Structure formats: structure tokens, C-alpha cells
Amino acid sequence: MSEYRTLRDFQMEQLADRTAAINYLQVTLEEYQVDGDMPFFLREIRTVLEAQGGIAKLAKRTDIEPAVLSEMLTSDAAPRLDMFSSILTALGCRLSIQPLEATECSTESVAGEMSIVSSKLSSPNPEVVEEKG
Image (tube, rainbow, N blue to C red):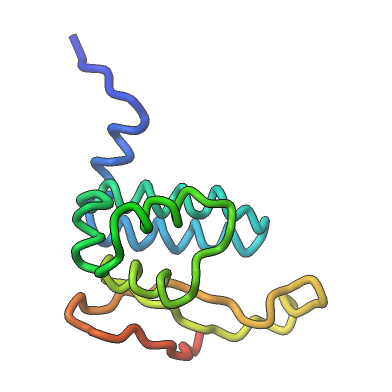
């Protein structure tokens, strides 16, 4: 007889892989840019953090108190950029600014598109880079 698992168990197993986690964060950020749903975006970041070792482990790598980190990720408000950047760096990512295609530019669009790109965990300062598509 086969063993049944929950979707959550499957998700945790898949997102334990660093590359899969970065790809998942990329898709989550793209979705946020479309719908602006901050609580969903933060919940999915929490999901990746749990799969990558949990809030306590990440708190040690970011020098952010676990309670502060947990509160930030359960809030409806956007996290401060420096805190968000610290989280991404601890996950081995950074923010990247990319130009929108001419067809994507409108008054409703964001002026630039952010994407998460893989970086080395040893990088002390996350960079903002322009990538040519």
C-alpha cells in the first residue's frame, strides 16, 4: 500500500533543494508583481524558509531576532528592503532590477521588474544588478 503525504510535506521536500527554492521565490515574486498580494508573498517566503531549515536557522544567518523575523513574515505590510535583502542573502539570492519590455510598460506597471537571482552565500552584501534579457 502506498504512503499518503500531505501537499505541505511534498512542498517541504521539494523546496529543501536550493535551486528549487530560488525558482519558487522567483515565481512567487512575479505573482506578487501581478496581483500585489503581500500576505501571500510573505507566506510563500516563510514556506521556503521552513524548507531551508526554519526561522531560527535563518535568524542566526541574518542577525535578525527570530521573533522579529517571524512577525515580519506574518504581517500584511511589506518588509523593509534591508531586512528583505538580508533574508534573500541568507537564502543565497539577491534582488535584481530588469527593464520591462516596451509592451509591459504602462501606468499600472511597476517602473522596474525585480527578480531573484542566485548568488553565493558568502557574498556579504547583496547587489542590485541589471541583467540584459
